[in-house]
Image (tube, rainbow, N blue to C red):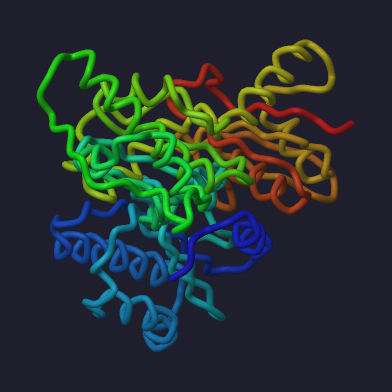
Length: 385
């Protein structure tokens, strides 16, 4: 299974022809009820088959069409997963099953084009990042993205406070881990002198500061040519000390608070993505600012029929919409450019916001899938011209 990306969504948007089956559903977290997920998929597939029969499809043709996704349903090995959602797109020529990094709503559409709205949140920026998990007993560095979080090796760096305190001279320890040498033997490593954890609070804080300088030196060496954001994970007291000595330029302001030794890798990834939301939403904030600056001009619109026409003509630069918003049914005539909006769904209708999204993708525009708390309540667009 592949993850959804912009190119894949654009390919799906090009399809036109009945039947085009679109199915999305959220999945349990690890350790949850996989059998329950399979039952939910089974029910959705049965409903899809009912709609195919209503559309006049014969049983033999239906069996051929649906067999690949039923095979997926029956393959128990495919359900040992950590993804958040499932998206299935079926035509007479192909069956595509995708994992989603974000939880999607449950939806089913059997039409002549795919419904893309439920999976548009997958277009949110998926840049890579690092997580530095700090505790006195354990230091770990992770590299992650929207799909994975993998622990990295940190060489020549003490990975615990007790290990750091085996050296009685921080400057020599720093030289040792820098690969420099002193003395005829070429080694700066001193005899092991363990300072212990007793003593005053000031001494403990000083020891932690020395420890974190060593860690920062190692991290800086690994990431010196990087510009990816680094999220800190740890208890607030330790993070405040680390921040006083850090030198990596791209540490994000929002940390993951708590003992990282007790946080699973999957939860660490989810918490990191939450901490990075403002960083990865920078493009959205800039586009919203552009939209509000041009409010009242012909460069922007909140009129859905106008947006549909502009999207078809390739004039939508940025489209804002809420994937969970109620559908606004209607039709679009490409020859005349006429858009009709209907109070209730009629035969041949389509969700006009979904249609605007498909046309925006096909013409290279950007789409921001807005969260429920965003102030824009209806689709809006910035025009190119």
